[in-house]
Length: 380
Image 1 (tube, rainbow, N blue to C red):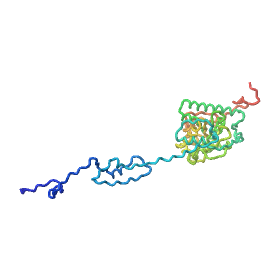
Image 2: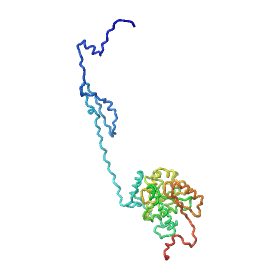
Image 3: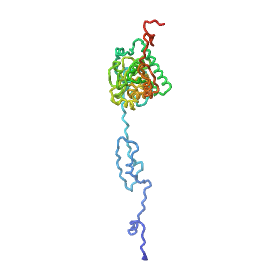
Image 4: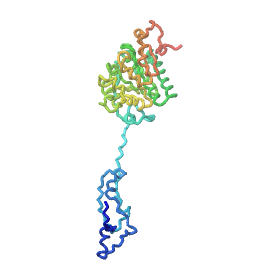
Protein backbone atom coordinates (compact mmCIF):
# COMPACT_ATOMS: atom_id res chain seq x y z
CA UNK A 1 0.00 0.00 0.00
CA UNK A 2 1.59 3.30 -1.18
CA UNK A 3 -0.61 5.81 0.60
CA UNK A 4 1.76 8.36 2.17
CA UNK A 5 -0.91 10.13 4.18
CA UNK A 6 0.38 10.63 7.71
CA UNK A 7 -1.57 8.68 10.23
CA UNK A 8 -2.41 9.89 13.72
CA UNK A 9 -0.12 8.61 16.40
CA UNK A 10 -1.77 6.16 18.72
CA UNK A 11 -1.81 7.05 22.36
CA UNK A 12 -0.76 4.26 24.49
CA UNK A 13 -2.58 3.43 27.61
CA UNK A 14 -6.04 2.52 28.69
CA UNK A 15 -9.17 4.47 27.81
CA UNK A 16 -9.16 6.09 31.25
CA UNK A 17 -5.57 7.16 30.87
CA UNK A 18 -6.24 8.66 27.46
CA UNK A 19 -9.34 10.56 28.67
CA UNK A 20 -7.70 11.82 31.85
CA UNK A 21 -6.09 14.99 30.27
CA UNK A 22 -9.46 16.15 28.91
CA UNK A 23 -11.03 16.09 32.39
CA UNK A 24 -7.91 17.27 34.22
CA UNK A 25 -7.78 14.05 36.17
CA UNK A 26 -4.62 12.32 37.14
CA UNK A 27 -5.27 8.91 38.69
CA UNK A 28 -3.05 8.15 41.62
CA UNK A 29 -1.31 4.84 41.67
CA UNK A 30 -3.08 2.27 43.81
CA UNK A 31 -0.78 0.66 46.28
CA UNK A 32 -1.81 -2.34 48.30
CA UNK A 33 -1.19 -2.19 52.03
CA UNK A 34 2.03 -3.69 53.15
CA UNK A 35 0.33 -6.35 55.25
CA UNK A 36 -2.24 -7.17 52.62
CA UNK A 37 -2.23 -10.69 51.33
CA UNK A 38 -4.14 -11.92 48.39
CA UNK A 39 -7.28 -13.70 49.52
CA UNK A 40 -6.74 -17.41 49.51
CA UNK A 41 -8.58 -19.61 47.03
CA UNK A 42 -11.44 -20.37 49.37
CA UNK A 43 -13.25 -22.70 47.02
CA UNK A 44 -10.10 -24.68 46.35
CA UNK A 45 -9.38 -24.89 50.07
CA UNK A 46 -12.85 -26.23 50.78
CA UNK A 47 -12.60 -28.87 48.05
CA UNK A 48 -9.29 -30.16 49.34
CA UNK A 49 -9.96 -33.49 51.14
CA UNK A 50 -9.12 -33.63 54.80
CA UNK A 51 -6.21 -35.95 55.43
CA UNK A 52 -7.33 -37.23 58.83
CA UNK A 53 -10.35 -39.55 58.90
CA UNK A 54 -13.41 -37.87 60.37
CA UNK A 55 -16.06 -40.22 61.72
CA UNK A 56 -18.79 -37.54 61.78
CA UNK A 57 -18.93 -35.16 58.76
CA UNK A 58 -18.81 -31.51 59.83
CA UNK A 59 -19.97 -28.96 57.21
CA UNK A 60 -17.53 -26.11 56.61
CA UNK A 61 -19.29 -22.77 55.91
CA UNK A 62 -18.35 -21.06 52.70
CA UNK A 63 -16.41 -17.81 53.22
CA UNK A 64 -17.41 -14.91 51.01
CA UNK A 65 -14.57 -12.95 49.39
CA UNK A 66 -13.76 -9.61 51.04
CA UNK A 67 -13.47 -6.27 49.19
CA UNK A 68 -10.15 -5.49 47.61
CA UNK A 69 -9.68 -2.38 49.78
CA UNK A 70 -9.87 -4.32 53.05
CA UNK A 71 -6.71 -6.02 54.17
CA UNK A 72 -6.88 -9.72 53.64
CA UNK A 73 -6.60 -11.87 56.75
CA UNK A 74 -3.56 -13.90 57.52
CA UNK A 75 -3.47 -17.39 56.00
CA UNK A 76 -3.78 -18.96 59.44
CA UNK A 77 -7.01 -17.02 60.14
CA UNK A 78 -8.80 -18.41 57.08
CA UNK A 79 -7.87 -22.04 57.71
CA UNK A 80 -10.61 -24.61 57.88
CA UNK A 81 -12.62 -24.65 61.04
CA UNK A 82 -11.12 -27.15 63.49
CA UNK A 83 -12.96 -30.45 63.54
CA UNK A 84 -13.33 -31.89 67.00
CA UNK A 85 -13.51 -35.67 66.90
CA UNK A 86 -15.06 -37.06 70.04
CA UNK A 87 -13.03 -39.85 71.64
CA UNK A 88 -14.45 -43.35 71.17
CA UNK A 89 -16.78 -44.44 73.87
CA UNK A 90 -15.09 -46.87 76.24
CA UNK A 91 -16.29 -50.41 75.69
CA UNK A 92 -17.32 -52.42 78.64
CA UNK A 93 -14.85 -55.16 79.30
CA UNK A 94 -16.47 -58.58 79.01
CA UNK A 95 -16.40 -60.35 82.36
CA UNK A 96 -14.28 -63.45 82.51
CA UNK A 97 -16.28 -66.68 82.64
CA UNK A 98 -16.76 -67.85 86.17
CA UNK A 99 -16.05 -71.54 86.37
CA UNK A 100 -16.46 -73.23 89.69
CA UNK A 101 -14.32 -76.18 88.69
CA UNK A 102 -12.18 -76.93 85.65
CA UNK A 103 -13.94 -78.61 82.77
CA UNK A 104 -13.47 -82.38 82.60
CA UNK A 105 -10.42 -83.21 80.54
CA UNK A 106 -8.73 -79.90 81.43
CA UNK A 107 -7.25 -79.95 84.93
CA UNK A 108 -6.12 -76.84 86.78
CA UNK A 109 -2.56 -75.71 86.27
CA UNK A 110 -2.26 -76.75 82.62
CA UNK A 111 -0.12 -74.51 80.48
CA UNK A 112 -1.18 -73.96 76.87
CA UNK A 113 1.63 -73.50 74.38
CA UNK A 114 1.73 -70.61 71.92
CA UNK A 115 -0.59 -71.29 69.01
CA UNK A 116 -1.85 -69.54 65.91
CA UNK A 117 -4.34 -66.68 66.53
CA UNK A 118 -7.14 -68.56 64.75
CA UNK A 119 -6.93 -71.33 67.37
CA UNK A 120 -7.21 -69.06 70.43
CA UNK A 121 -11.05 -69.00 70.54
CA UNK A 122 -11.14 -72.79 70.39
CA UNK A 123 -8.59 -73.07 73.20
CA UNK A 124 -10.46 -70.57 75.35
CA UNK A 125 -13.67 -72.53 74.90
CA UNK A 126 -11.89 -75.77 75.73
CA UNK A 127 -10.77 -74.35 79.04
CA UNK A 128 -14.20 -73.14 80.12
CA UNK A 129 -16.83 -75.31 78.41
CA UNK A 130 -19.01 -77.42 80.66
CA UNK A 131 -19.24 -80.73 78.81
CA UNK A 132 -21.57 -83.62 79.45
CA UNK A 133 -20.38 -86.74 81.24
CA UNK A 134 -21.60 -90.20 80.22
CA UNK A 135 -20.80 -93.57 81.79
CA UNK A 136 -19.14 -96.29 79.72
CA UNK A 137 -21.05 -99.57 79.75
CA UNK A 138 -18.65 -102.13 81.23
CA UNK A 139 -20.92 -105.02 80.19
CA UNK A 140 -20.65 -103.93 76.55
CA UNK A 141 -16.86 -103.78 76.88
CA UNK A 142 -16.72 -107.25 78.38
CA UNK A 143 -18.98 -108.64 75.70
CA UNK A 144 -16.69 -107.20 73.02
CA UNK A 145 -13.61 -108.74 74.63
CA UNK A 146 -12.05 -105.37 75.40
CA UNK A 147 -10.22 -103.97 78.40
CA UNK A 148 -12.30 -103.24 81.50
CA UNK A 149 -11.29 -100.08 83.38
CA UNK A 150 -10.14 -100.93 86.89
CA UNK A 151 -10.08 -104.68 86.27
CA UNK A 152 -7.17 -107.01 86.97
CA UNK A 153 -4.16 -107.06 84.69
CA UNK A 154 -4.71 -109.42 81.76
CA UNK A 155 -2.51 -110.54 78.85
CA UNK A 156 -4.48 -108.16 76.61
CA UNK A 157 -3.78 -105.26 78.98
CA UNK A 158 -0.07 -106.07 78.95
CA UNK A 159 0.02 -106.23 75.18
CA UNK A 160 -1.52 -102.76 74.84
CA UNK A 161 0.87 -101.46 77.48
CA UNK A 162 3.69 -102.32 75.11
CA UNK A 163 1.91 -100.79 72.13
CA UNK A 164 1.14 -97.48 73.84
CA UNK A 165 4.65 -97.19 75.28
CA UNK A 166 6.21 -97.08 71.82
CA UNK A 167 3.72 -94.42 70.67
CA UNK A 168 4.36 -92.26 73.74
CA UNK A 169 8.12 -92.56 73.30
CA UNK A 170 7.83 -91.45 69.68
CA UNK A 171 5.74 -88.43 70.69
CA UNK A 172 8.31 -87.42 73.30
CA UNK A 173 11.20 -87.88 70.89
CA UNK A 174 9.53 -85.61 68.32
CA UNK A 175 8.80 -83.00 71.01
CA UNK A 176 12.45 -83.01 72.09
CA UNK A 177 14.01 -82.40 68.68
CA UNK A 178 11.34 -80.78 66.49
CA UNK A 179 9.13 -77.71 66.43
CA UNK A 180 6.16 -77.14 68.74
CA UNK A 181 3.76 -77.70 65.85
CA UNK A 182 5.33 -81.07 65.03
CA UNK A 183 5.24 -82.00 68.71
CA UNK A 184 1.52 -81.29 68.85
CA UNK A 185 0.89 -83.46 65.79
CA UNK A 186 2.98 -86.28 67.26
CA UNK A 187 0.35 -86.47 70.01
CA UNK A 188 -2.29 -87.25 67.34
CA UNK A 189 -2.40 -90.94 66.37
CA UNK A 190 -4.35 -92.47 63.50
CA UNK A 191 -5.42 -96.11 64.01
CA UNK A 192 -6.08 -97.67 60.62
CA UNK A 193 -6.08 -100.95 58.71
CA UNK A 194 -5.76 -101.98 55.08
CA UNK A 195 -9.15 -103.70 54.76
CA UNK A 196 -12.34 -103.91 56.83
CA UNK A 197 -12.57 -106.57 59.54
CA UNK A 198 -8.92 -106.44 60.65
CA UNK A 199 -9.60 -105.05 64.14
CA UNK A 200 -8.79 -101.34 63.88
CA UNK A 201 -11.72 -100.14 66.04
CA UNK A 202 -10.99 -102.86 68.61
CA UNK A 203 -7.38 -101.67 68.80
CA UNK A 204 -8.32 -97.97 68.88
CA UNK A 205 -10.68 -98.41 71.86
CA UNK A 206 -8.28 -100.60 73.82
CA UNK A 207 -5.40 -98.24 73.09
CA UNK A 208 -7.45 -95.31 74.40
CA UNK A 209 -8.47 -97.23 77.55
CA UNK A 210 -4.87 -98.21 78.18
CA UNK A 211 -3.47 -94.72 77.62
CA UNK A 212 -6.09 -93.24 79.97
CA UNK A 213 -4.37 -95.06 82.85
CA UNK A 214 -1.21 -93.00 82.31
CA UNK A 215 -0.53 -90.37 84.98
CA UNK A 216 0.59 -87.54 82.71
CA UNK A 217 -1.79 -87.70 79.74
CA UNK A 218 -5.45 -87.28 78.91
CA UNK A 219 -6.97 -89.14 75.98
CA UNK A 220 -9.46 -88.01 73.37
CA UNK A 221 -10.83 -90.84 71.22
CA UNK A 222 -12.23 -89.52 67.93
CA UNK A 223 -14.61 -91.63 65.86
CA UNK A 224 -13.35 -90.68 62.40
CA UNK A 225 -14.77 -93.71 60.59
CA UNK A 226 -17.43 -91.51 59.02
CA UNK A 227 -19.02 -94.10 56.69
CA UNK A 228 -19.48 -96.64 59.53
CA UNK A 229 -18.98 -95.04 62.96
CA UNK A 230 -18.80 -97.74 65.62
CA UNK A 231 -16.90 -96.31 68.60
CA UNK A 232 -19.88 -95.00 70.60
CA UNK A 233 -21.99 -98.22 70.31
CA UNK A 234 -19.00 -100.32 71.46
CA UNK A 235 -18.64 -98.11 74.53
CA UNK A 236 -22.36 -97.91 75.25
CA UNK A 237 -22.36 -94.12 74.83
CA UNK A 238 -25.18 -91.97 73.40
CA UNK A 239 -24.75 -90.25 70.04
CA UNK A 240 -24.61 -86.55 69.36
CA UNK A 241 -23.03 -83.87 67.17
CA UNK A 242 -19.44 -84.50 66.25
CA UNK A 243 -16.46 -83.75 64.05
CA UNK A 244 -18.27 -83.65 60.71
CA UNK A 245 -20.81 -81.16 62.10
CA UNK A 246 -17.96 -78.85 63.10
CA UNK A 247 -16.23 -79.17 59.72
CA UNK A 248 -19.52 -78.47 57.91
CA UNK A 249 -20.06 -75.33 60.01
CA UNK A 250 -23.28 -76.39 61.76
CA UNK A 251 -21.44 -76.45 65.13
CA UNK A 252 -19.16 -73.56 66.03
CA UNK A 253 -16.67 -75.20 68.38
CA UNK A 254 -15.49 -78.78 68.45
CA UNK A 255 -14.95 -78.79 72.21
CA UNK A 256 -18.69 -78.52 72.77
CA UNK A 257 -19.17 -81.90 71.02
CA UNK A 258 -16.75 -83.83 73.22
CA UNK A 259 -18.28 -86.33 75.65
CA UNK A 260 -16.44 -86.85 78.93
CA UNK A 261 -16.73 -90.36 80.32
CA UNK A 262 -16.69 -91.76 83.82
CA UNK A 263 -13.27 -93.25 83.04
CA UNK A 264 -10.78 -90.69 84.38
CA UNK A 265 -8.85 -88.86 81.67
CA UNK A 266 -10.85 -90.37 78.78
CA UNK A 267 -13.23 -88.44 76.51
CA UNK A 268 -14.83 -89.23 73.16
CA UNK A 269 -15.63 -87.13 70.10
CA UNK A 270 -18.45 -88.57 67.91
CA UNK A 271 -18.25 -88.70 64.13
CA UNK A 272 -21.26 -86.43 63.62
CA UNK A 273 -23.92 -86.33 60.94
CA UNK A 274 -23.04 -88.45 57.93
CA UNK A 275 -21.99 -86.50 54.83
CA UNK A 276 -21.28 -87.36 51.21
CA UNK A 277 -18.38 -84.89 51.21
CA UNK A 278 -16.47 -86.17 54.25
CA UNK A 279 -13.15 -86.38 52.38
CA UNK A 280 -13.51 -82.85 51.01
CA UNK A 281 -14.38 -81.51 54.47
CA UNK A 282 -11.27 -83.17 55.92
CA UNK A 283 -9.11 -81.61 53.20
CA UNK A 284 -10.34 -78.07 53.95
CA UNK A 285 -8.42 -75.35 55.77
CA UNK A 286 -11.07 -75.39 58.49
CA UNK A 287 -10.32 -79.07 59.14
CA UNK A 288 -6.63 -78.28 59.57
CA UNK A 289 -7.42 -75.57 62.13
CA UNK A 290 -9.96 -77.70 64.01
CA UNK A 291 -7.79 -80.83 64.19
CA UNK A 292 -4.67 -78.87 65.15
CA UNK A 293 -6.74 -77.20 67.85
CA UNK A 294 -7.64 -80.55 69.42
CA UNK A 295 -4.01 -81.07 70.42
CA UNK A 296 -3.13 -77.41 71.02
CA UNK A 297 -6.05 -76.94 73.45
CA UNK A 298 -4.40 -79.22 76.00
CA UNK A 299 -0.67 -80.05 76.02
CA UNK A 300 -1.41 -83.27 77.95
CA UNK A 301 -3.95 -84.54 75.44
CA UNK A 302 -3.34 -87.59 73.25
CA UNK A 303 -5.78 -87.66 70.31
CA UNK A 304 -6.57 -91.10 68.84
CA UNK A 305 -8.50 -91.28 65.56
CA UNK A 306 -10.37 -94.42 64.54
CA UNK A 307 -10.13 -94.19 60.76
CA UNK A 308 -11.83 -95.98 57.86
CA UNK A 309 -9.73 -98.72 56.21
CA UNK A 310 -7.05 -97.20 54.01
CA UNK A 311 -7.88 -99.32 50.94
CA UNK A 312 -11.66 -99.11 51.34
CA UNK A 313 -12.33 -95.37 51.89
CA UNK A 314 -10.45 -92.17 51.00
CA UNK A 315 -10.69 -90.27 54.34
CA UNK A 316 -7.82 -92.31 55.78
CA UNK A 317 -5.26 -90.86 53.37
CA UNK A 318 -6.44 -87.32 54.16
CA UNK A 319 -6.38 -87.91 57.92
CA UNK A 320 -2.78 -89.07 57.55
CA UNK A 321 -1.93 -85.49 56.54
CA UNK A 322 -3.18 -84.14 59.88
CA UNK A 323 -1.63 -86.57 62.37
CA UNK A 324 1.91 -87.24 63.53
CA UNK A 325 1.73 -91.03 63.93
CA UNK A 326 -0.09 -93.93 62.27
CA UNK A 327 -0.76 -97.27 63.94
CA UNK A 328 -1.52 -99.71 61.11
CA UNK A 329 -3.37 -102.81 62.33
CA UNK A 330 -2.35 -106.02 60.51
CA UNK A 331 -4.46 -109.12 61.06
CA UNK A 332 -2.24 -112.18 61.16
CA UNK A 333 -4.70 -114.52 59.47
CA UNK A 334 -6.16 -112.07 56.94
CA UNK A 335 -3.98 -109.15 55.78
CA UNK A 336 -1.93 -109.97 52.70
CA UNK A 337 1.52 -108.60 52.07
CA UNK A 338 0.29 -106.77 48.97
CA UNK A 339 -2.49 -105.05 50.91
CA UNK A 340 -0.06 -104.07 53.63
CA UNK A 341 2.39 -102.48 51.21
CA UNK A 342 -0.39 -100.64 49.41
CA UNK A 343 -1.82 -99.35 52.68
CA UNK A 344 1.57 -98.04 53.78
CA UNK A 345 1.92 -96.18 50.47
CA UNK A 346 -1.56 -94.71 50.92
CA UNK A 347 -0.69 -93.38 54.38
CA UNK A 348 2.85 -92.21 53.59
CA UNK A 349 1.91 -88.57 54.17
CA UNK A 350 2.61 -89.35 57.83
CA UNK A 351 6.27 -89.77 58.68
CA UNK A 352 5.89 -92.21 61.59
CA UNK A 353 4.00 -95.43 60.65
CA UNK A 354 4.09 -98.40 63.04
CA UNK A 355 2.52 -101.83 62.69
CA UNK A 356 0.64 -103.89 65.26
CA UNK A 357 -0.09 -107.56 64.66
CA UNK A 358 -3.63 -108.52 65.61
CA UNK A 359 -5.37 -111.90 66.08
CA UNK A 360 -2.23 -113.91 66.72
CA UNK A 361 -2.79 -117.60 67.53
CA UNK A 362 -1.25 -119.07 70.67
CA UNK A 363 -0.71 -122.73 71.47
CA UNK A 364 -3.24 -124.10 73.95
CA UNK A 365 -1.87 -124.08 77.46
CA UNK A 366 1.03 -121.83 76.48
CA UNK A 367 2.22 -119.01 78.71
CA UNK A 368 0.89 -115.80 77.19
CA UNK A 369 2.45 -112.44 77.75
CA UNK A 370 1.04 -110.98 80.96
CA UNK A 371 0.31 -114.25 82.74
CA UNK A 372 2.83 -113.28 85.44
CA UNK A 373 0.07 -111.10 86.98
CA UNK A 374 -2.27 -114.05 87.62
CA UNK A 375 -3.67 -113.92 91.12
CA UNK A 376 -3.21 -116.86 93.50
CA UNK A 377 -0.01 -118.02 91.84
CA UNK A 378 3.17 -117.87 93.82
CA UNK A 379 5.86 -115.73 92.24
CA UNK A 380 9.08 -117.53 91.58
